[in-house]
Length: 310
Ligand SMILES: *[C@@H]1O[C@H](CO)[C@@H](O)[C@H](O)[C@H]1NC(C)=O
Ligand SMILES: *[C@@H]1O[C@H](CO)[C@@H](O)[C@H](O)[C@H]1NC(C)=O
Ligand SMILES: *[C@@H]1O[C@H](CO)[C@@H](O)[C@H](O)[C@H]1NC(C)=O
Ligand SMILES: *[C@@H]1O[C@H](CO)[C@@H](O)[C@H](O)[C@H]1NC(C)=O
Ligand SMILES: *[C@@H]1O[C@H](CO)[C@@H](O)[C@H](O)[C@H]1NC(C)=O
Image (cartoon, rainbow, N blue to C red; front, top):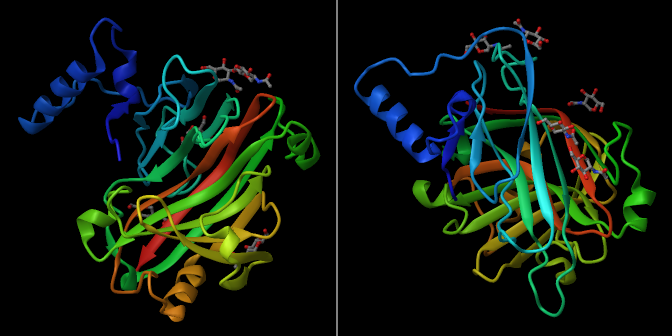
């Protein structure tokens, strides 16, 4: 996982200095006990900023839970056809609705379909829980509270998701939570080294948007606060065990505790499945962007991820 952070505070500086230099100065000052160079203004202004980089995270200042937002266009290179930008809306007062409320964000993108065996997943733009919440032993996780609302559209209007328009535009994309787990704390934090990936898909649009192991059939089912999920299992090319709880129809709002989905996996005790003795090292929510005939806007006007331990 690429964790090169850029604080909003830094962006107010002369553009001539590179971000790398600024990060260097800031950490040097912090290491030597000096106050940070840039003290943010704590007024009530709302700031919407745009990030179109391939892949590095943005870390808004907050008095509540820390989050890192990342356009993460891992399957796209500068110069390739297609584009993706992320807008992040922050409050200068660093105080959101609740301790775990995330800044509002959206992505707008369009990528072409790759021909032949080309990789069609161009990005997993996401918001990741930061600030030392993970790694955590799965046995001690008592709740994964999600309060979330999203929309996906082929225009920039604020209305609800138009599933018919998405189908007509051949949008291939999903909306998902991504978690990584391992018996080793450090590996659990590394999406390339973790033994298990557990995903929760709230929607999958398009003919090619398949979970790993979808062809092998449903392994288990569970309904959480009105949303029916089906579990799939398979291994990806890196031989990681991927378990996906996929909603049977698009779920644009979800309010509830995801912990029962993990409990069900632990109960099954199958080879290749994580168990309670493993660690949860990474947690993010976002959208995998495959391709589309029209520009797509995925918005997350309200999100809270509240992980509690006991
Ligand atoms: C912080 O700013 C936001 C946006 O202006 C506002 O809605 C909120 O009430 C403010 N919170 C506090 C504690 O001042
Ligand atoms: C994204 O943010 C910019 C300001 O940085 C704003 O001008 C633009 O309208 C926003 N785009 C969308 C789709 O909301
Ligand atoms: C929010 O966090 C602060 C400090 O971490 C704590 O004192 C407060 O009780 C929390 N509020 C809620 C609603 O959890
Ligand atoms: C939405 O707004 C962005 C600029 O903020 C623009 O690049 C994009 O093309 C717009 N999408 C549509 C479908 O108009
Ligand atoms: C179930 O969802 C409803 C509405 O979506 C929400 O008001 C309620 O709090 C949720 N229940 C739980 C137990 O989270």
